[in-house]
Length: 137
Image (cartoon, rainbow, N blue to C red):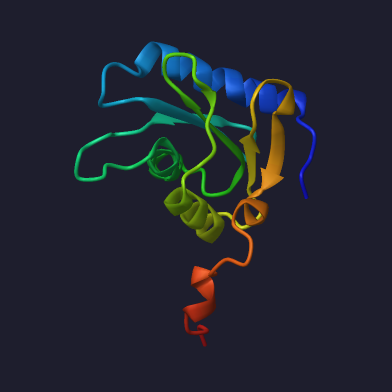
């Protein structure tokens, strides 16, 4: 279900924009992401661009969050450098985000169309990675 943005969502956007403006330099780091953990912490990261297919900011953020002990994320947003604004996740990131955090909200849209969507809305009729796992006995 798509939801209107909450003041916390705007705080996440601003955190990502700040990282994009202060940490994205040149062609190696062109995107920043921010996520709110269920405990309220905000975690940020930047992409690691490389011609071999370096990870997007959202994927780097998953690792940073885990390194900080935040294993349950509530909401995520990515923004581009050079004030490009909110950028929706690519297909690979949508699948990974769905697999790791099936209840995650993702902030998408531009200007007055900014909104939070559940990850499954961004990847309808999706393959669920956990579905192929053997049940633990």
